[in-house]
Length: 253
Image (cartoon, rainbow, N blue to C red; front, side):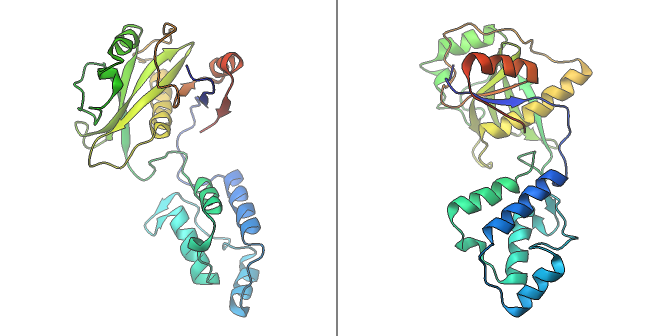
């Protein structure tokens, strides 16, 4: 078990199509701070005055529109209106902008579904031919499976047989531990955060319909879990109890 786990609280809020009011405020404050010392020509200064800020009052804060992703539309608007090139910003500032424009569903704009799978596939079926759980840690995989562990697979809703990738899941102290993710060749690289966000949605849906297939029992101690990259998904009470025991921070996706 990792010393510092990143905990993700489970909630039943459905993914949104646009920034909420709080997120809009944070984004506007960021732009105000990042562009505080920009020198504008007369036309750009007039546009800024009319807008009452860096973005127009009727700017669409949808994650994705036919004009592109939110961050792309913001960058285009800043250049078209004020001749500001975000590519000249520092990597740290660009990273902050990216985080503020990041959808609550990390694959927003695509219809992605998740599904539980029994750990019985062949190594390489999900791009995981190099996974240690089919090699030196095979015995740990068997322990995880025996204690209710499963695989979680992401795929396009219209192509359920064409999986994008998978991670492993182990029930842990009333929550679920996600680890060891892989992406199939030919698909956009998936991070463990992507699996966690979709598993949170999947778990919420399954709980509502009372058809959850894996029970929240504890996995035996001493099992290998890829210690440097673990995520926990569960209800707030369970995560807070685990946090008191192991430390870490609670992030609400």
